[in-house]
Image 1 (spheres, helix red, strand yellow):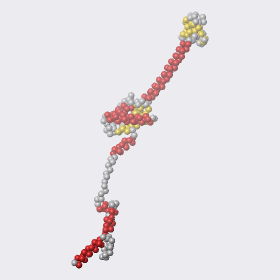
Image 2 (cartoon, one colour; image 1 turned 90 degrees about the vertical axis):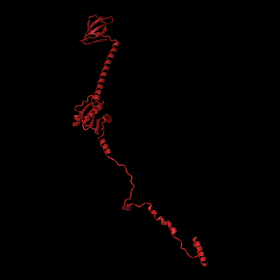
Image 3 (cartoon, rainbow, N blue to C red; image 1 turned 180 degrees about the horizontal axis):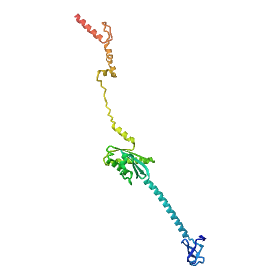
Image 4 (cartoon, rainbow, N blue to C red; image 1 turned 90 degrees about the horizontal axis):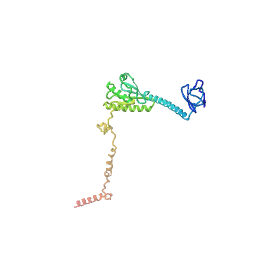
Length: 285
């Protein structure tokens, strides 16, 4: 194949062989070309370059290596950006309200990338504190210890935690884990502090602790005076009083006793007659 390399491209014959020659072009490349009767030292403008199959494979491998290298560079760049954002870019915030108020900016990896005070006491608390390179749990523990040292936090104090981020799951996990971490840390230092993630939680707890409910007492009503006895309702057993005369009524009514000898229907008539006869007999005697 005859290739025209341009007007400015020239070749210098470096070696000659029966079938081919080795050329040096004006760009400093060594090429093989068909030997068309060239002699060493000849300068030619055109040449029939020879391409071997291995040369094509070599060029393909070189192109493949270049493409792989570029792809690796792009992947590293993307991963580097993602890693930078994962570690150094704020993802959410966590506010700690003790008496001083502080706000931590937290990356997705949990690293503290910013710390500010939300009030005057908070600015005094974080003024000399170095948070760089620390995660959120370590920074929160150290800030709590610093608040105790500066007498901002005492026995029975309160810490309110409020997390904010686009992800509701991240907010929930951060508040729950931070509360557990601070409770364990302060318990190791024998300090009892109420930690809440809901501003209304502590208020409800204080109200329930301050209310004392007395135990119910069972009392039997006792009528202590006559007035109370008159006002008291009659007992259901009261109607049983008239029952006594009703039971005695058949006994109280007696049939009239007659002097007649007629049979009254009672057994006592015979007894009376007997007694009268005996009396009469005694009188006769």
